[in-house]
Length: 383
Image (cartoon, rainbow, N blue to C red; front, side, top):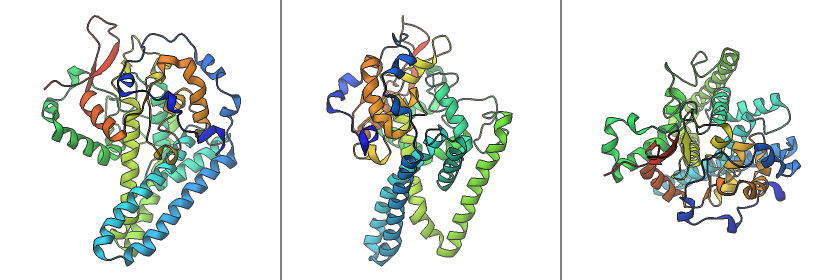
């Protein structure tokens, strides 16, 4: 669809694994944000209500077709086949709904349309459907974008310094321990982050995305946190009525399985965008916004790049210009790579290999001996 949003990453831009592991520069870039923006065609910053809604309509249509096929035909299968068919449905539907999640994420960045009220309305409806507290996430995620790469102020997947590692970490430094870590992260990481701020920025008291008076939010934001909670409660009530009418097993198969996939991909995508051996983190003595925004990496999820609206392989551009619609992000990425040079990072390692490697190699951060002490790099625990 158009030159703006559906192109694939040009083959020549892909690096070998060895090249992708080379550390990116950490010195202040020889270019400014303004210079980067000038390299991008001006139409890439234009938001179209019709085009944005076309992606919503397409995704929801595919989701509705999958729902109809699953609920109409899977119950007709003999039991051994139905036990296989429901997980297949859950994975495919979960991938489609991850695309819906991405569109709601775009609403949170005011990249859906030129109208903030429309963005918030669409985002609230779509995210509530996926049990995401829209405004609560919107405000914490905005702070993530404002403080990316900062060890003190970033909001999510903030790496630990070596001195802060837990006593039990050494017992997880083996294949079974890494598998357990990945399993818990992908299945429970998202709800644990929302409810208990797990992997998030430390606060001086309990932080929760459902608490309007928690330390994450300011006074002017609290009313909208209540609205997010109402959206979640309304969805939970709807699921309760469906369970009463059709049974809990039906709800788990039709909705719970796909939601588990959505949550897993959300965590995996975010984890791999901000966790890489080549990426620096900064303390307050070195951090600035541009270097922090560049401390992220584009990944290749194959066909799922398109299903996920290219949030996977255009994340660097997204952090630089978060109000840009996703359907222009590929064109923008192609335009800024010559300007960014070595500051642009792309890793085409297959996702299953990358998540295992990063779980092993990116356990904590520390500065290099004799180097700039405000710049921290990922390291691994020694056996």
